[in-house]
Amino acid sequence: MNLLHFSIRIQLSKHCLLKIRACLYLALSICLLAIGTEVRAGGHYEIVINPGVKERILSSNTLRSIFSMHLKTWSDGTKIRVFVLSDDDQLHQIVSKEKLNVFPYQLRSTWDRLVFSGTGQAPIKVNSSEEMLARIATTPGAIGYLWRANINENVNVLEIK
Amino acid sequence: MKMLTCSRLSSYFSSSVRWLGKGVAVLWVIGAVSVQAQQLDQPQKQPESAQAPVKWVQAKDLPAEATETGNSKEKSGVISTALKWWRSTDRPGDLQIHGFVTQAYIVTSDNDVFGNSDKGGSFGLTEAGLNASVRPLPKLQISAQVLSRRAGEGNTGMPRLDFAFLDYRLYSHETNQFGIRVGRLKNPFGFYNDTRDVAFTRPGILLPQSIYFDRTRNLGLSGDSVQLYGETAVAKLGTISTQFGVWLPIVSDKDTQLSILGAIPRGQLNREVSYIGRGIFETNDKRLRLGISGIWLNTSYDPSSKSHDPTGPGAFQFTPIYFSAQYNTERWTLTSEYAIRHLKYDDNFNSRVLNGLNVYGESYYFQGEYRFTPRLEGIVRYDVLYTDRSDRDGSHWASQSSARQGLEHTRFAKDITVGLRWNVTPEFMLRAEYHHVNGTGWLSRLDNPAPKDTEQHWDLYSILASYRF
Image (tube, rainbow over all chains, first blue to last red; front, side):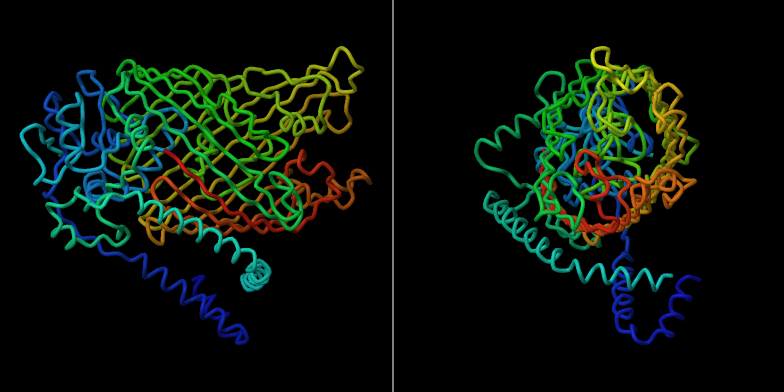
């Protein structure tokens, strides 16, 4: 409705037609940029935990609560320690969107709010899949994610329902 | 109306293009240098994090995330070792240390914001913070932050204890949490107050001033408090998180005293028991966030006993309510907040101006953030403040005294903001911003002591660089 009005006005005021046309092209190109295609593909990665963690199955809401750093302890009362890759890592982005169903920037702002208001801690950042594997295997209560190809017997895979 | 706004906007732009041009050029240079530095630091090796499934990754189309693969950037030398130590979990109690440093450059056409900004610009805004948190027990966290803020006359940069408290989780089961916090705490109101001094977390160089006044920031920022908090799942829709606190506000700084009493007093303001609460509903995918927060702040004036104090022992109450809403998509974040602010003075101030003053102020803003790429974001905002919602143009207020003639513009402010944010790395960020403001309602009175010297229509240009770890 608004757009219609807007376009009628454009026709009425010819002297600034060029300017507005440029604006519209800009708006159009922004809209086009916004339309992205989502390709779904699961199963090439897993949520992994330290072998000492008793949980085998978690709901996706509980998983999101863990990666949002709100849920801090496993059901037996031990500390949860969350490991993540860098914000612009592709595996991080895929896990964030597909498993946690949030955009990476939302996780980042959630963590920043916790850290800089003192009401929580940030997840521990690792620099590579190798480091992720090593840290999860050796840190009690650890949780993270790995490409399937990088998983070995030193960590357990967590089922998400 | 729209056309009118458009043409006015374009005239503002044409006059400001020169400044923006300069600003963007400076930003570009700084950014380019820092990117270069990053590349120099980076060892000559391929990112390994996504090596194995790399074919599949390339086949996958992630439109907004088309950045380089992996992130194995390593800084060399001492800094790297120190950072690794900081990030290591092997320290006792899961100690974490984080911090940030921010520097802004501000130029205004008229009026002063954070220093003498209208005479060739100023580097008047510097923010730095350092915080530490430990978890000695699974359910216990202790956190503290020291903050230094240099911003105009109101903030000298003297470090102050921003927060320091114990957080004990009383109950925790899957998505339901309940706990208590005791100590100096950030005041939870609106979407941004808790982390308002961290440039990475706020939308723009300046927060919407109608709601997050920098003038009386210390009053609203943090206080000594006992707070209960909870988080609970609502069916399958999302979660509600709530905080409720009893607190003693910090009322000792000059900006606050000036705002409440209209002059720097000889006596002092007392800290009295006050209340604060906030509830935020968030859908599971965090796309929709709705919040409501309220403050009930009490303070009273203690006249000086030594000198003859003209101000009497009055009591002051500030009870704002805030409504917040946000919608997130991959590229857009749309945010709006509305506040109605009730200020009430009793009859004991011995002042014709203050006695019995009972005013409802009103504030709101609409804001759109757009992520062109994960690195580059744009922001547009329209922010409105009315000191008295029953006298929006200040005309009634001005008609009450001849000294107020021509100062109507101190009773409102309408701010149009456009800005850009460039995340050069996840740790380093640059920003450029332009404001056109009609009104002087939120200007600091310490920085602008003579209202008659302020201009109703003014522009503000700013660039900012911020680093965090």
